[in-house]
Image (tube, rainbow, N blue to C red; front, side):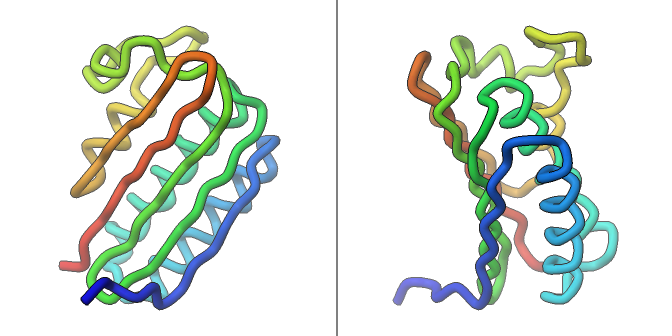
Amino acid sequence: MANTPLNQVRFTISNVVDVVKARRRGLVVATEMGLHPAEANKIAVVISELGRNIEQYAGEGVITLTVYDKYVEIIAEDQGPGIPDVARVLAGGYTTSQGMGLGISGSKRLMDEFEIQSVVGKGTTIRALKRLR
């Protein structure tokens, strides 16, 4: 039987204020579902990093936070320029902006599962999952 979502929140991201709101709400939702504060903060950090990438590179997109019985899932979707070299981005240190290039690779390290689907010129979808311990 498929897992049934207990709670789902969608955040439209088009500016830095949207990113901050999504991060704050994600922290609250993760805490309310019973994640340890350190784990809940990881959820907030990943929402912030992925949201910032949407705002900076795609201009707009959506982050969906879904709570299940045993895990929380974050899906970030945009229709931006896409990522030409996903492996390089996941390795860390690669950036096309002035940042350190650690947002996506750092987010991957914070989560239990992390997947990227990206097509240049069409957009990117990132799925990240954190299990309850």
